Structures are given as C-alpha cells and as structure tokens.
Image (cartoon, rainbow, N blue to C red; front, side):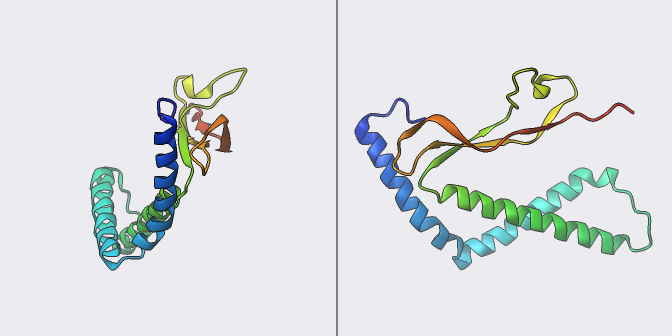
Length: 149
C-alpha cells in the first residue's frame, strides 16, 4: 500500500484522501447517484432471489407477502452496506479487512468446516497519510463452525 511510496507521494495521497472525505458525502446525496443506487439495489435483489429460489420454502398462503418482506429486508441490508461503504471511502484514513481470526492457541478459520462470518476491520493509515506502526483493530474477525448434525 503506502510502504513503497516516496514522501511526496504519501503527502499527495493524504491530501487526496482528505479531499475525498469532503466530496463523497455530498456525492452520495446527488439525485443521479440515488437513482443508480435504487437500480443497483433492485438488480442485487433480483439476482440473489433468483440464485436462492430453489431453496425457497413457502409454508403459507401469503407467499407473495413473504417474498415482498424478504425483498424489503434485503434492500435494507444492501442500503446499510452502501452507507457503510460510503462512510469508509469518505474517511481521510485507510482501512484493511482481516479475513482470519488471529488466536494464539488455534485458528478456527483454518479448521475444516469453519468460515469467517464477520471480517476484521483495521485502521492502517492515519488521517495524515502516515502508516500506523501496528494496525488499530476496530473490529475483530468472527468465525463460525456449524455443529455436526
């Protein structure tokens, strides 16, 4: 990332990130982006619904209502993901996702049948474009291992 940058490049990067942090929130409020966001959300809902349709179980007569509720829930999840992405991108500092759980005794993410359900989130560059000596852990990764049935 910034380790191979010259001092002038690091300074330019810090200025660019500062400008981005000012401009992105205003961009998110633009009507054109809102229209694009609605269309992209509708596409994601359609694609995911089609991908998981064969596992869909309808246990009541109101399956259309259930599908609408599921689509609304998915739209809310996509909206939150968009908001988080915009918030991360509009920060003057830089972050890194961590996909493995770091434990001294064991690494559950490396065990067969385990997977990361929430990636870790670390701050690696401060607001001035300087590398942080040891990444600042904001969220630790969480793994899950289903119990055998």
